[in-house]
Length: 297
Image 1 (cartoon, rainbow, N blue to C red):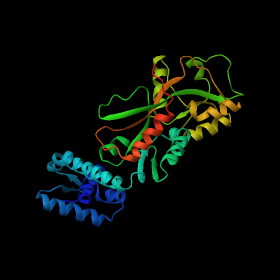
Image 2: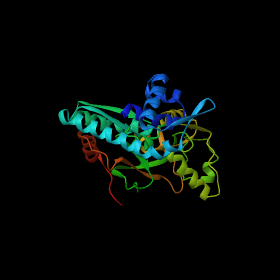
Image 3: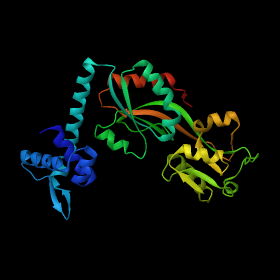
Image 4: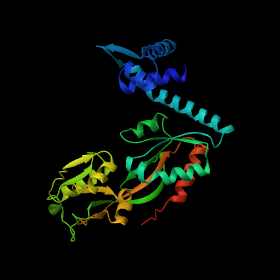
């Protein structure tokens, strides 16, 4: 049994076809198919069966799934430990972060990390990305998350970074001096992040509590696009303060007061508690703790 065979089985299990798995693994479909057959033969059981033009996992595969994922985690752990025995400050560090954090929070962290350990290659991924599955499959070392409260998961370790305020922002020519109610806010063109974004979900809940519905004129996945729209005076936007901090200081944009806002979130570094903490991850943790401004309460 080889890690390559097991990774192929798990990837087909995740994406539902040999073709999609081959693309994700950067392998030829024939190679993935061969690995499935080899592992099936070695184990003496059928792992997948044909269904139309695709494959479906057998009951045996589902029963073995957790053990197969554990096998890959152990392989990765051994590889990490061996890699850092001789090259403690060199190698790849795989991190996920939302786009707003990537653009406006991570540069200072990355700069400090490079000063501490110039041999680190930081591989950064942003949404859309299933970071929880990536943790489970050993494909991710750490994540920068933005949440309403500290993480409650017992299998994650968390290092709090900053209190993040999400505010309503507009061009200075559009600014209303008095705080707007949500009902008054709906009279203006609103620009928000995409559905299911943490910021927008919080705002939608606020609107529902007032018997209203958040109906944005525009919604974008990229916070920089929203910022550009606000600079063009296209409406009132919902953004983390860190995204528009320089614009607020320069007077190019203004915070629009809205009753019962800003919305408060926490940014933090998280990683699986049971995972081997490589020297590279330790360096990142050190930098995060140095730059943290979070004060409880």
